[in-house]
Image (cartoon, rainbow, N blue to C red; front, side, top):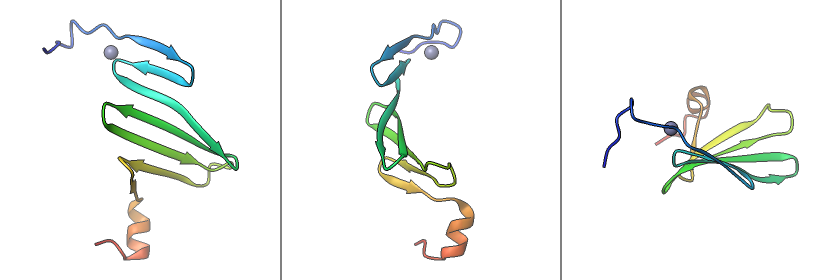
Length: 80
Ligand SMILES: [Zn+2]
């Protein structure tokens, strides 16, 4: 079953740790030593975002695999 853009009525449900928006869940996951973890998921796909207290370090994982910044890949030169 498909739904056209015109017919789409957005649904948002508040949840204890975030909200669900048309099948997309946004959750406040965890706090560990002041690093905050945010999760966005849809079905089996998920993105975890780790944000340090100052915001200087933000790391993003897609389905458990870290998404590196381009400049880091160049600096490290260890990507396979
Ligand atoms: Zn919607």
